[in-house]
Image 1 (cartoon, rainbow, N blue to C red):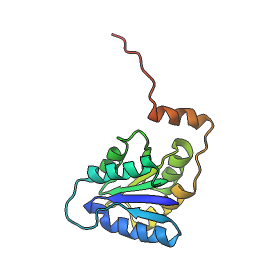
Image 2 (image 1 turned 90 degrees about the vertical axis):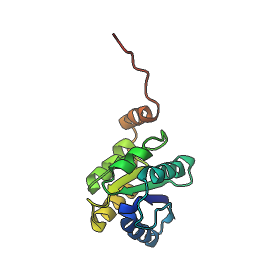
Image 3 (image 1 turned 180 degrees about the horizontal axis):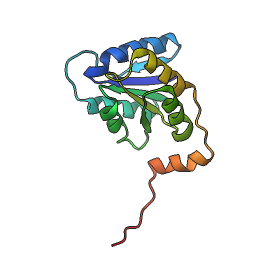
Image 4 (image 1 turned 180 degrees about the vertical axis):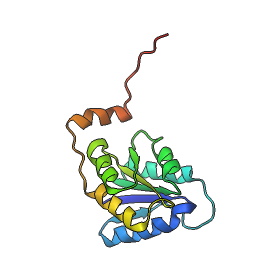
Length: 150
């Protein structure tokens, strides 16, 4: 699988470890930075990752920052991306199965390497269930017009 991975300075060590592990698992990994401890702005890397997934140059994305929250918000600004911030394998599996998430986000200050690997395994091996979930997922990228009453 072609996977893009990006992080801010708080998660660059976790990103490097996960990228190496994923390559060892046979995946093609595009590391979009950052690559050191110098402070950077997580939205820049979230937007870069979102573009890689939206353009099709990556099938899935992994977004990392200190908490996983900020970078997930930036990825989700792109309507082609469905980024789920997860803490454990069940949420990673459900993000794929029910929400067809194409990007996973985790926090380096909250998630250790073994848990991150377990989350990625669940995320990368779970298929979208479709069926009743497909209608809902379509609405994520194409919100319906809501009537406003005054």
